[in-house]
Image (cartoon, rainbow, N blue to C red):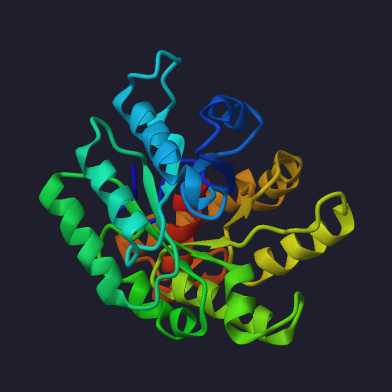
Length: 284
């Protein structure tokens, strides 16, 4: 389910990419600590296996694969670019499936119009999935705020660091990359959407992961993608919200609803109320 402001209200701190060619890994991914499993039809799948991967996802959604059914509220599907033949085939599969994943990740989104077209398709088909546009280019970053509010079904934005770096010719850790991350997070904060950071690609380097997570948390992200289960515990830890913070947020929201101007000695304006609602939504 989602809150009234669009942010998903299930636990959604960690998002683990898993190749859709390996449906046997889906239950293991969820058991490993991931809040959300991303069945990946895009980067993790070679061109020769796209149809196989798509059939695997269709089977899971149709609950015809003979395995224990997955909790769909924890399932996301990353499609191929919606402008591609594979992406259109992915969308057709989703609208024809018997059940819907909680989230659909749309890669390489650069305009609000792309999101609006997909949202209209979902509405016509009665597909209840939330849309998570992936911001992976300079154009996408420039339009992030408009993309965030392109349709009510948009619940989050995810930053795609690798593709963004390729688009602008930046090296890992480059200043341009960090600025882009911050702009995507700011677009989400301003428009009450969940900000999901790109994966950390430094496997086997806990210090690099901690540094990456600290930057994300300090700049407005409330969740992070992962490409390996070994990162999940650290992601869940840093993006878990303390009981004290949740209590503060509840009191602020209650105060705002009653027209009370001060909580804990601090003025409650719309910015503070928006932050409190965001905290509660992220806390699930």
